[in-house]
Length: 87
Image (tube, rainbow, N blue to C red):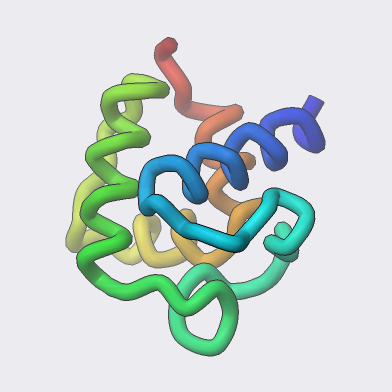
């Protein structure tokens, strides 16, 4: 079940951020989303946060320490969505 959601999150990231030349298979589920991993930045995190709220009904606080952990990798994000999704 989590593997399916991980793939769904990868596709969501690619579509939301218009990442060209990247497929879901190119994204390591355990790699960092920011910095040396996928290389996302703070603007990307805002876009993802808004998209996740709309798609899954999540309430995400931009300033919380938990949010930093949730956005640390695709796997962490998928685990959070699985536990907290409304839609």
